[in-house]
Structure formats: structure tokens, C-alpha cells
Image (cartoon, rainbow, N blue to C red; front, top):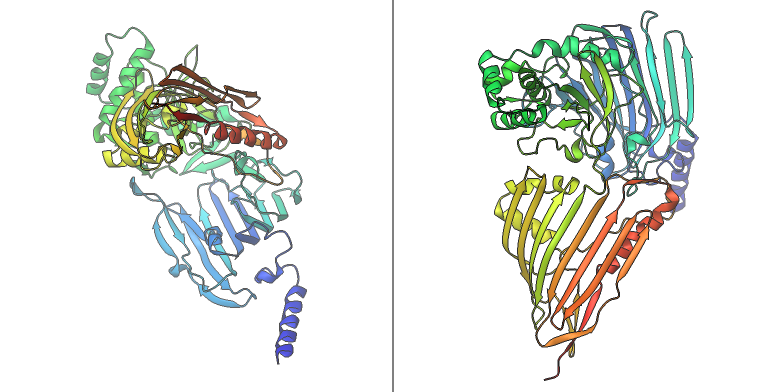
Length: 637
């Protein structure tokens, strides 16, 4: 009987394997290597764009995904956004078991429907329908079919065959058709080495890519949008919420945005204009005036997301923000610009991709890009950038949310690509001036005064608004390598004038040292020990990218137990390489006092993948040196 069942299984397996390569519903037909590192495999993803005119676009999508495990559930991507201008024509899903047998049909009415924005949004007409499916077993396959229509043709979907990590792609195609009266521009990225087919004829462009192995993220590698294959599309002639436009480059794009979306929004009431003029009447230069206006905005308004209107791109009128006291990034940036205009200070509305990944706008491809708006103040020395949604950030500080990337600055004369502030290694500093006392029973009593600047400031300024309980947990986590830490005192100061965050922390812990007979081992670095070592890879695939450099400097006085003396000190350490510097000094001042000085510099930059192991070794060495120990011996009575 067992042989009989085995034979049936083998016959079934052979039949399944014998299906054409377009049998995407069974997990048994996934090509070799595509499921390596994968939580899911996109079997087929076909996108058809029909641009019938400058104010009508149809988008058809058919996506078949085999989910291999629980983590792959998030890669089904069976959802569609819609609003008052995007209509859903077709929406359905089919679920198959691992053998390709249909087990469930899901209709449009069975999809979940909710707001497409978070709870911080006051109101929005943007909604999303999405599939919520709980599988019985793994693997399984979902076929998702969706068709939408819209009068907005400013946002033509890109060809993005690989959008998620740990997802293989068996086949992905894209086609766009358009009339002769429309000019389509495109930009290809990272297509080298892909199994790709391209067709281009009058009024139609097609792409197909096959067998993309799963993207496995690596520590300190470029983000996926800089690595994955992609083709961007834009129409030279388009419509956004009934507003027609024709743009060829960033200059004309910016001119259109200023003329049709921004220029008519600067309608401040006369009373507000008079108030801000009075506010800055004693200031002699534009920068000091701008600082007063920025503080005025921080005190008066708050950020609330409002995503309605002209595709979420047109800001509310300045008069509305002035009256209501709130707005989204567009509205608050525009309001700040209106106030600066009132006092004669030049500034520019600026579109940016926000986020710590430092994503730039495509500087050579003018199209609807970006997800955030900030303000630019031109300056002969260095452009000033203002984050107008924050009530806490100092004037001219943007942090890692919008630093070091290409952005679109919009002026009345047109648009231009500029680069935001890059915080250099020398600017990103943390300095610790500390001391600690060790008792005869191994108890540590420590005080740390910490000053952070640059991106280090950005990592910490938010602490000043945290509850004491949350701060206690934060500092215990910070010194997690010390057992039984008790925080005794916390004093925080946000010095917005000098853009420095100051922490004064006292703590104690028992059993900090290790004893063996009449000897005691003391780990010198108690206040700033490196515990991070980048992951190891047998075969590194991607280049090494260090996005932001930093400098740590520590100067710590150590008071030893009265009944112990130094038996041996670690040797001074100096390491210098292309990635940075590590320097540690151990100075015996007298029989009861040792001074520990440490400096660790990590430089930003991009390096070939062959350098990664040396970079990892640098961090590994720092971690080892940070565990250097002083040997103490009990004094003879």
C-alpha cells in the first residue's frame, strides 16, 4: 500500500512539474534559487497602463504570489488605494493550495476598507481596500486582480519588479500605451544583469523581467531603491485634479507648481502681517528675522496631517492656517514662507523624500516625486533648511529626516535641484565627561555628563519630553551591559541656541567587577561601551555604505577601592584605517585614581564590498578594546 501511495505522489509531482512554466499556482513549480532566502515568490506580476488622454488613465494589475511561510504574508500586497478621483473597476482575489488547487474566492465586498492614513490625520479622502486572509497552511498562492481609473495622470506607476526584501520574482511585466499627442519620458535604473526584454513602438512601451532572486538585506548596504531594477515613467502633458500641465524638466515643473498650486495661497490677514512686522522690527538682518518668525510658528501652530484637495500637493491658504492654528507639512511650510514674505525675507517651498535613508529626488528626471515639504532660505554661505512641522527642533536644524539628499526647491522663476545639509563626521559628536567610584565589594557609583551635537543631537533631543519612567527605562537600556543598574538622577537640557543636548546622569550598580582571591578585574569603559558588531557574510553581495559618520570622545576619572592597588593597566591603543580612528589611553594619576580617555571616529562614505570584512573587524576590535580591564590586587596591611 505504501508503494502504491508513493507512486501516486510521484506521478502527481511529475505532472505538476510537467506543467508549462506559466503554471504559477503551485508552489512545486517555483524555479530553483528563487525561493532561496525568500519568504514569498512573485510568480507573475503584470501591470497594464492605458493613458487614453491627458485626463484619463486606466491601470490593470494581476499579481500572483506564492507565500512560503508566515513572514511572507506581508508580501501578498493585495491592496488598492482610492479616493474621490481614483475609481475601482475590478477587485478580486483567488487563493490556491500548494498543489495549485483553488480553495477560496474573495470578491470586492469582502476586502477590508479603511482610511489610508494614520490617526494623526485630521481628515482625508484617501482610503484603501486590502485583503485580510489567514492561511490554513503553507505554502499557499494568492492571485490578486485589480483595475482602476482616474482623471489624474500626473502619477504614472513605475515598473518596480522587486520592491520587498526576501521576495523572489519569477516574472514581472509592464506595458504602457498612449496616444500620439502625449510624450512619455522614462528612466531606467539598475537593469544591468537582469533577464529583461524591452519593446518600444509608436504609442506603446513594454518591459518584462524574469527570475530575480530574493533581495537579502545586508548591514551597511545601500537601500533597496538604490539597488533594485526600476523604470520610471512620466507624461510630458498631464492633469492633476483638473489642472493641466506640460513639463519637460525640473525648471518647468517648479514653475508649474508655483504658478498653479502655490502662488495664490499667500493671503495672510493684515493683522498678522502687522504683528510679525512688529515682532522683527529690532532685528537688523534676515537670519535673525527668520529665527523670530520660526519661533513664532512653533509657538502658534501644530502639525496635523490633512490629505485632501489637489492630490495632496496643494497647500492650504496661509489665512486658513493662521485662523485654525494647525496644518500639514505643506500648509505649515507655506505659512512660514508667507510670514517671511511679510517681513521681507526670501524663502522657497521645497519638496523632499523624507526618512533616514537619505533618498534623493531623481535629479535628471522631472516627475511627481517626494513625500514631504520643508522650507529653504537661500544664503551666500550655506543654504538654511527649516522643518516647519516640528515644535521642538532648533532653527536651521533638520537632522536625519531630510539631511544630505537632492530636493526640489520651487521659486517663482521655476524649480531647481539643491542638496540639503550634510552633517559631517566632525559635526556629529558625543562627548562624555564622567567619573565613577568602585568600592571594595565591586559596587559602582557613576556620574556622566554628556553633550551631543549634529546627528547625535537628533538622536536624543526628544528625550526632554519623555516621562520619568520612560527615561529610566531608556538609560537602563543604554547601559544594558551593566547588570542591576539603578538610575539615581537625571537632568536633561535642550540647548537650542547652540544645538546641543546635555544629559547629566547618575547611576549605581552592584557586582560591577569580578573577584578572584585577592584580585579584582575592572572593565574600564563603563559609560560608553560598544556592543555592536555588524553581521558576518560568507559572500558579501552589496557595497559598503556608511551614511553618517560620528565622533565619540570620553574622558573618565576612575576612583579605585582604598584597599586595592593597580597590578596592571591595559596598554594604550591606537588604530587608524580608512574607516576611522580608535584611541584609548589609561593614565595612572596616583595609587587610587586612573583616568581613561577614549576617542572613536567613524567616517561616512561608500566602499567596495571587499572592504566590508575589514570594516566589521574594526567594530569587532573596538568592542574588544572597550572590554579592556584593569587588574587590581588587594593591598597588604
